[in-house]
Image (cartoon, rainbow, N blue to C red; front, side, top):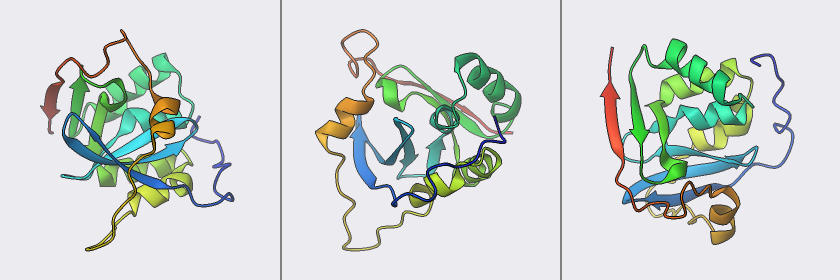
Length: 152
């Protein structure tokens, strides 16, 4: 998987959007039908979404996360909004992983996004939300998220 070329790097620059999940502000970028999120308060990135973008299937993602990610600094979000769930890592680790998986160039607009004072990042349109929404039980968002922080 890591040898795949970044096929979207020659296309137009993807849009970075602003969104909020249960009061948590994020920036997100849509790549391979997956909204990759960067949390605004601490610049943590959802690495589970990066693995989805690199087309790792569920067993591959689980194995990779257990072997490569859960041994270092990370935060697991379980419950709550489906799109927000997953394993979150510091930006530097997410950038290194995206480079390793050859998808860095496609995700670079998100990694380098810095709107600056007075510049607003547009809010994700409802069409983006609908396109990436994955309802688990029809009541997505009604549950509270469980956070597990790990640091080594």
